[in-house]
Image 1 (spheres, rainbow, N blue to C red):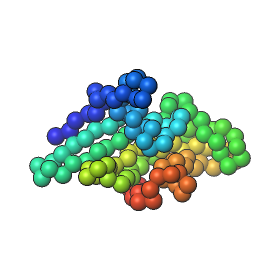
Image 2 (cartoon, helix red, strand yellow; image 1 turned 90 degrees about the vertical axis):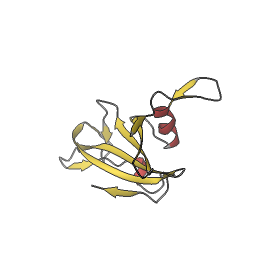
Image 3 (cartoon, one colour; image 1 turned 45 degrees about the horizontal axis):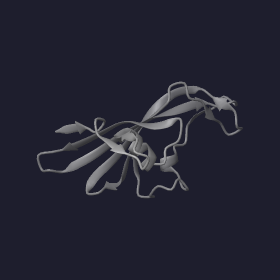
Image 4 (cartoon, rainbow, N blue to C red; image 1 turned 120 degrees about the vertical axis):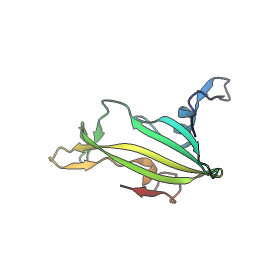
Length: 129
């Protein structure tokens, strides 16, 4: 059984509605061009529950290479991380991570803020390629 969380809205301290994707984007500390595009919750027949967050980039985004030049997306690679549990629910982050062609012609995967030291997120992330 799976349930999309997108129809759930919360109120911010300023009494404005915020949907679950925006809430999880804020909770993960994501900044433009990164955003949570989808949040789903599922349970199985043994009542194990999982939260799956789909992270995406704004279409047409460009990324800095090692020399500070903005580079377009070359292609993407699918990645998945297991985050710390959300309350008692296992939480997974899914992302199609862009790869860029840098100004020196090398193709490299863009760093993601939630999977590197200093991101403010727990070090207890597991990554599957």
